[in-house]
Figure 1 (cartoon, rainbow, N blue to C red):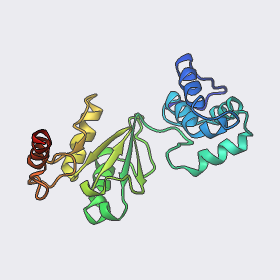
Figure 2: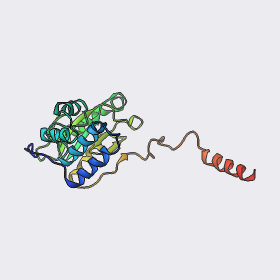
Figure 3: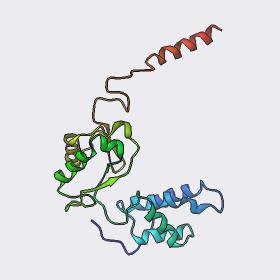
Figure 4: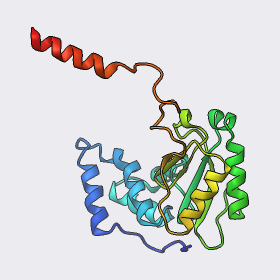
Length: 207
């Protein structure tokens, strides 16, 4: 993993993205763009924010650096130290815990040979605990970079990690035969909505 750079500056592409974000805010409210600009900076820097990047965003928005640092240290989506290529966030909040998130975390530990908060020696994986990632219906789940993996068990977790290590893109979303967050056996209610909609359309046509 890379050491902290001595300087930081947006690439031309990211500068254009930053300017497009800032343009969404009224005149005099440009500092409101601090969170998306930190995200752009973090993505450019391999998933974490060194101090030069925080200071750069502060200058870009004409803000005191301490104000930007306050944001970066408050929100958990910002990383202040290097992370692995695959940033594994295992949800351990109540619905996931009740459905076996301990097993998912243990599978990550045993399969990767690291503990929570650590990064593999090859820099491929970092594993952390997350508080509610918002996919409670399909618990337990984990987020890896920008992708959600849901309805997990230990074997599915290991398979996903192996596929990522092999340079493949694992199936995202539910790892069971489930369509999004519908019941496993398919819809159990509102099963005639399409017929009702067609009937209403037909009735309007008759009138």
